[in-house]
Every structure is written in structure tokens, then in C-alpha cells.
Length: 340
Image 1: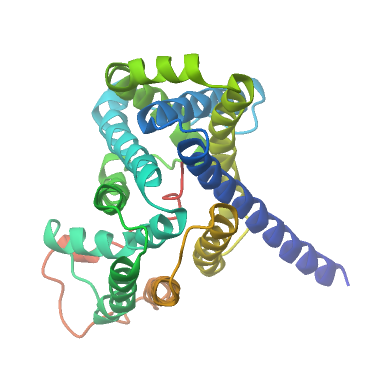
Image 2: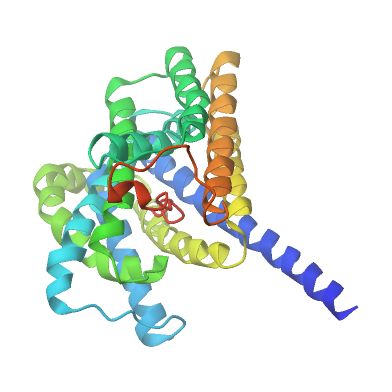
């Protein structure tokens, strides 16, 4: 009886973790799109900077003040040698995501972001010469095919937004891959990651944001008809962005890897639907079908990766000897790639 109750509570906790993760993720995306489209605040660098500042303050409060998470100590030399390069990629990744939201619909942006597993595998194969089982390559076919179909049939296609989202996938993959080497020895969770990287990202982005967008932001502040409510939404998106990082930490510790993978792909479908209901951007049948194919491919990719990771020791992934040490590395985990 006691075991049954524990099992039921575990299932309920997993569902609650997934729902709150979906809620924060979709809310951040919708708020950012609302800021760019409805508030006419067309300054993605400034929005990203506000997110970094909010996340840095939030992480400090959680770790130092509320002490909800222990601080992972990092050697001062490693802060510049390891954390700073990661922060640069982290910054580029977030900025490109916001730039893409500035120009393309949420539905299309989310579909392109699903291309990240493919860019991760391709980069590791091309640059790091890592071997992958043929089943991994096969699982990428529907992902690539779905992205191509969605791109060709997208009714609100914008070249700048498309490439910003695409290069955002490359930045996400690069961050994930480099984390294996640069952060070796440090077991960062999402809160500690933000604690160390957000201040660096703010420092990197603050000057470009002021130089490139400062005059435009000043003019917007003077011309905005409902300044208080608009600023509330803009800064609220920053607070929600930090809450998203906290929710990622919770969902990772409340679900299995398979559940996380499936929930992550369903999250894209939820964001797709919510954005269409709110912004009413035109979506063709083939475009929606392409998004569906992509999500099925991502789910299959996660399933194959999990099966290979769970293979018994001594059961080879392929009938040949690895060509280098890089081939013996585990597949890179992208559990924390969803941070905003």
C-alpha cells in the first residue's frame, strides 16, 4: 500500500514538474514575441540583456540568500578559462533565439530549434571525428525532412529570422559539446550554470546593446503610450526566464530521460498551438505536417540515443573498432539546452 502511494506521488510529481516547465517555457516565448510584435519593442539585444540581468539576480537569491541550492565552487582561474568562453556561446545562443522571434512566428522558430540534435551530431562528426551508430543517423532523416518541409511551406518566411534560428541551433550544439571538455569536473545544474554565466553574458552584451539599440530604446520610451504596463511585461519576461531555469532543474530531477525527451517534444507542440491561438499567424496544412514529422524524428532520436546509452557493457553499438578515443565518449546530453 505504501509503495503504491509512493508510486502515485512520483507520477503526480512528474506530471506537475512537466506542466510547470511547459508553462514557464511557453510563457517566456509568447511574452518575447508579444514584446516584439504587440509592444513594438524591436530590440532583441536589450531584451536578452534584461533576461541575463534578471537571471543573474534570481540565481544569486536562490543560492546565496534563500540557500535553496548549494553553490558549486569554481576555481577563479577556471572562471575565465572555462566559464567565460561558455558564457560567450550562451550569450550568442540566447540573442539569436530572440532575433529569430523578432522576425518569424513562434511556431516556425520552435520547429527550426528542433534541428538541434542534427547539428549536434553533425558537428561532432565533422570537427571532433566522433563515430555514431547508423541508427542515430537514421533518426535524423525525419528531423531534417520535417524542417525542410516546414521551411518551404512557411507562409511568414523571413530569411534573417530563419538563419538566426538555424545558427542558434549551431550555437546550442556548440555549447553542449564544449561543455563536455570546458566544464569537465564540474557537475553544473541549471541554477549554478546561470549563476556563473549570466553575469558574464551581461558584461558581453551590455555595450553592444547600448551602442546598437540605445537610441532606439530611448525613443521608444518617450513615444510609448502605456509605458508602465509595457515595462512590466518586458521585465516580467526576464523574471519568467529565470523561473524557466529553475523549472528545468525541477523537471530533470522529477522525470526519467525518456519522459523528459517526450515531454520536450510535446512542449514544442504546445508552444506551436498557443502561439497560433494568440497571434493567429497563418499556418498551412503542409507546414503543420512538417512540424509533426520533425517532432516524431526528435522523439525517435531521443529513443535511439537512450537505447544505445543503456546497452549492456560489452555489447558493441556497431560491429567495428572505434577509430579514436572520441568515439568512446557518450552521446552528449542536451537536457539543459532549453534555458532562456
